[in-house]
Amino acid sequence: MPDLPAGPPVAAGQEALSLGSEGAPAPMVELPAAMVAEPVGPNPVGSNPVGSSSAESPPVAPTPAGVGQVRLPDDDAVAEDRLLSDCPYCGQSNQRIGTRCQRCSRVVVRLPAWAQHRRHNWLLSRISWKRIIFSAAVSLFLVFVIWLNYPFAPNPVILLKKIQSEMTADVGPGVWTVSGRDLRNSRSMEVGYPPPDGEVVWNSFIPEPLDSEPVAQHANAYVGSANGIYKIAEHDGQIREGWKGATPGRITGAAAVVESYLFFGSTDHTVNAWSTLNGDAWWSFPAEDTVEVAPVVSDGLVYISSGKAWLYALDARSGSLIWRTQLDSNASASVAIYDGRLFVGDDKGIFYILSARTGQEWFRYRTLKTIAGSPVVSADGTRAYFPSSGQLYAVSAEEREVPGLYQFKKIWAQLWLWQVPGVPRPPGQQGGLWRFSPENPLQGIFSSPALSDGDNGSVLYVGGYDHNMYALDAVDGSELWTFSADDAIHASPLIVKDRLVFGDDSGNLYSLDRHDGSLDWRISLSSAVKIPPTLSNELLIVRTNDGNIYGIK
Image 1 (cartoon, rainbow, N blue to C red):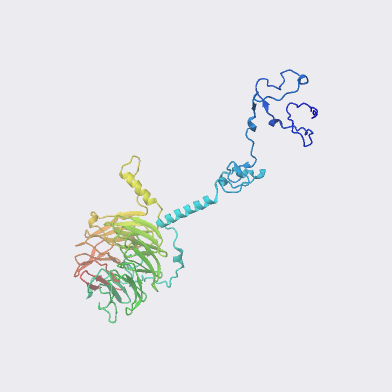
Image 2: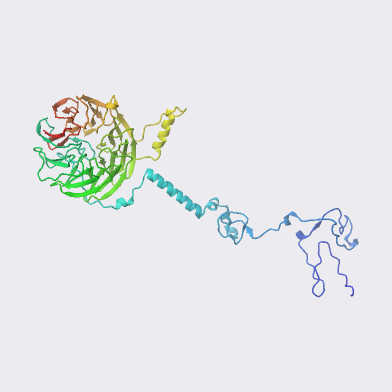
């Protein structure tokens, strides 16, 4: 085989390529300097000594294996993967272009330079649909929990229920249509007929008497008992003929008479509406438990409570349920209504302010024991009064509950009682104005006051188990005068113009000058007066514990 002609010597920095298919040498390709191996070691074979001439050097022979070592530069130790990039949406590093990001699950693309700023947006890099949905769910849950404890929005279904009438208890002179005289429970008749002189004009008897306070309209009085409701003529005290008043249950609370309707609750778990003409039933509503308190009628709604702590608002015309709400305990007496607000107390000692239209709870004031009577509201609607723990409380009637404030003050008070250093005395409960207490609260106040809002100022009149009748300034609770009766005063008094009428447990009935507490007249009846007296036209109607009922002029 003939010798092939020797090719040109391989220059340093070049590498001979393989021959072509026809044996001709392939063209020489100059490689980038970064990919040329650098020899290491002292003067390796094939290198020229310093200062020698390349022209005088013989051709370089291939370096024998094992002679010298080769080291690659650090930049070329690992070749750069141009398919890896930072996610342009969330900034996650080392994500392969064309695949989904491991953090935000969006497809990784190489954005142009003008869009690269989104990678550095801290807020956008942390927003995702999962986080938005989770945050919304948590927020809704917290709002729902707060609403359960401090409801700030009524049930919209209630607002869609149409009330069929505007029936409201008559508070004009000469009538006593609801317990407490009017919607504020003022027990005050400051216009109309003159005060009675203490003359008994008739005496009647109601069998199996209970604590039902008489109500009156159109020369008729209606009184509840264990047998039902009696309709009595005011001129002679006799039971009206043709009246069908028998009921399956006992009538322990007062009735309410409005227009031609007589409303009352019964221990047979019903709320009823009868015709005042003959006692025919208009409608009956089934309650959750026994109904033993008096109803109140305002703006077409009948407000009444039952056992198991339920409070109802019924349509006065049809008896259909508009709303109901459950208190912490049974309502202790009838409600008061003023300017769309409903006031009620319960057996647990909690005083409530609710929306009269929807039943939405707006405020609570907590006491230690049962609220012993119906709330009384001032003429301007700014204050409410009620008895509890043998004391008379005055609270703001315009308060709205601040969520968590009561619980915070409760913890504050506990720390103060423990005498923790630096903890000051806590402020009073939200809404509290003043409290009046007799010397011995155990023989204190256990009935609702009567309220006069005259030109000479607002005055409260309330009796106690300590035999005293108190006149108090309604603004600050200061004592104006005191009258001592012969026995405990169990029932609320009655204001008739400038006179104050009340009874005691010995059966005495008193009439005082309410400006100074001086005695006007006094008569003795057959038994204790534990039911508040009422007034119809010029007739004072008084029930005693033994079932007798008196007409006094």
